[in-house]
Each structure stands twice: as structure tokens, then as C-alpha cells.
Image 1: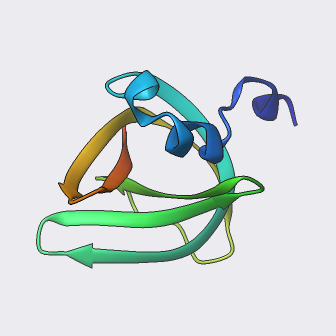
Image 2: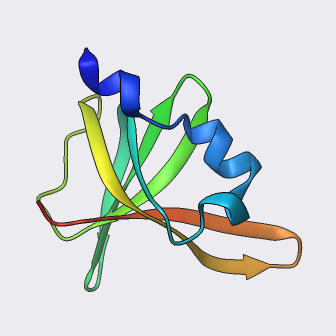
Amino acid sequence: CSQGLFSTPVGKIKASPRDYDGKQVTVNGTVTDSASLFFVKYFFLKDDSGEITVVTDRVLPHKGEKVAVTGKVQEAFSFGDNQVIVIVETAK
């Protein structure tokens, strides 16, 4: 698929989150789980290099669905040395 040509591997984003912070990226992968918590909807997207959380205001994809997501990389929060990096999906 041609989208894969322009996508960023999840592992690259997670390995160098500062390089991607605030930047728009496209990732491709398989949805491993999704949830809705108060006003926040999110799902987990996994590719060959890792897994990342995607925050969205669109309809949540189903588990096992293959999707391409475009959004901004953001640090959701830090806890000690652990950073939670998310992609906030941009409306199409």
C-alpha cells in the first residue's frame, strides 16, 4: 500500500520522542484495543516496531482493524523516567 511509504515507524517515535514532539506524523498499524474515558477516546496502534496510543475524537476503530492515522505527537505525561507518548489524531 502506498501509505506505508510515507508512514513513520512507531518505534522511531518512541525511541526519539523529542525529535517528533509537536510534529505531524502518519503511522500505519493494527488496532490492539480501544477505550473511551470521560471525554477522551483513544486506541492502541501496533506496527512491526512498537505500539503507541492514539487519542481521537472520531469513531473508535475495532480491535484487529488496520488503520493509517495522521496526527501530532505529544507527551501526555511523565512519571519519573517513564514518558507516555501519544498521537493526537487530526480531524480529516
